[in-house]
Amino acid sequence: MIDSMIARTHDLAAITALSIAILLVSAHPITLSTLIFAIIANLVGGIVPDIDQPTAPFWRNLPIGNVFGKVFSKMTGGHRFITHSILGVLIIGYLFFVLLNFISPIIGSVDVNVVWWAFMIGILSHLIMDTFNKEGVPWLLPIPIKIGFLPIKALRIETDSWVENWVIFPGLVIFNCCLYLINYQYILHLLRTMVV
Image (spheres, rainbow, N blue to C red):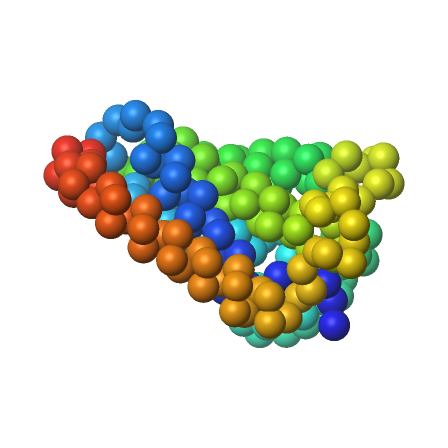
């Protein structure tokens, strides 16, 4: 089994990070379409670093995706290489920015800057979560050092283990519920005043 948290954990971590960012940053009003695109971009960003893995959900959901996945995996140096580094984040972020600006005439009233930031928050949440994994993350590529938290590898999380499924994932669910309950009035205010 490849050491990477499962997609649902990454998706939930991405939404958690986006929620925290929204609550901490004073945002300007956005359209409903921007909000929807931002949430989708955040979820995609939460799993995009794993496109270096031929069995990633992204490739599994495409016709002949396994072929593209294998080719892309070889091009990126395999799992947990460039797509799991600061360099990879910058490259992927730049490519996504170019894509957003290319399609911006088609998507009209969508604020591509908000969508881009939501995507980047998703990517960074993925790398942070994988830093807790047994393998760690090569944040500083091309320096070939994998950084992990906790320093003792034996204490780190294994993929799809009981710790991920019964502690981390439910912990994120509970954290989100508490976050939304505590900030319920403020979230309603944001939805009323921000989403136009």
